[in-house]
Image 1: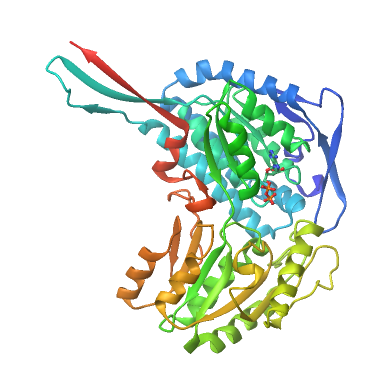
Image 2 (image 1 turned 180 degrees about the vertical axis):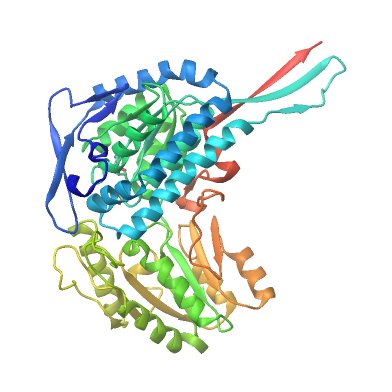
Length: 485
Ligand code: ADP
């Protein structure tokens, strides 16, 4: 990997704790592997609670000066960080693809997306406005100011090794918080590379720490039990989110939770079918189906069901599967063997419930964790895939008759993150967008992620929003000041 980087110093094998690049106190390490090739890229330190506590203490100390700076002063450093990420986009993308497997073009897109959060929230640092409220008595003046919440701790998954951290670090650092992150153990290298660039941009020592660790639950406990941490921000499964919420309850800690999804993608009879296929490909097969906003259930109205299935299968068959570092590859491997098993289990379950395979359905000839992009038809609400996220390249097509039925089936889940639908009738579009119980609705588009919009879920998909001017609120506390004159 080092040999293909323009700046090999971005490949770091030490953790960043309290402003120093360190090994674990006990010297232990864990392997980072390339899922396309199955080989070990390098090892990184396996930190524990003691190092994490030091990082938290340093973040609190560094905040004293960082939070006292003007928004503009912090914004200038954030802007520099953004510029450095974009200047090093190719290298950051290569590191990301090597550790995670997504195609290079998608990895580059993720770097730009992640950097966008650093840029956006840096700019927002200048606009942390308070409020004045007319007093309740003649001699009273009411003002509301907003202040950084305190040290923020983050836990993130492997599917967006850069952007999931950037969209938490962006608002936290912009408003003056200290930030301690624990990247997924599958993908620590992207976080470390981003931190190198943060240092070069001028982030003060200790304000940002990166805890590489294979002991996720230990780090989670330190985050939840350390009194200095005031905010826990997590992206991952609903299952782990529940554990962390329970742990965080002991300190009544503020939490942002970006949890699982089970996105419906609805195609109505009046949809532009080619556009719907394009949207379904983008939504379902981006990152090989491994995102929490990937279409998980595709509902197609009976009048266009067969035509849609045929067109989708054709597009799926044209996908180029391979090592993400190779030119032109559109679908990489799955992250690990467990992911392959889940995909196989969901496909078998559809078959057991009377569905059939239109294309794909088996491991790919490339071996390892490569899997054939798959389209299934005749899928019913009884199938596992209707209430569990597959997190893989499987497009299950459900048939429906009426608009009410589509909305009811789409909402028949504990999740409520992203949803999508294709239609042209303006009355229908209005009814359906209002009827879907989701935090995000894509209408006639399969791509909804941008730093400019509030990303987040309802129901058991989470708490809080990331991105847009709303996203900054998760890292601020308001203070009401009552002045008697
Ligand atoms: P995914 O399937 O996307 O990896 P998980 O919710 O299992 O989703 O993991 C998300 C992140 O949370 C990962 O970095 C993982 O290591 C971490 N994690 C898993 N279990 C715990 C835990 N008990 N406490 C803290 N972090 C955890």
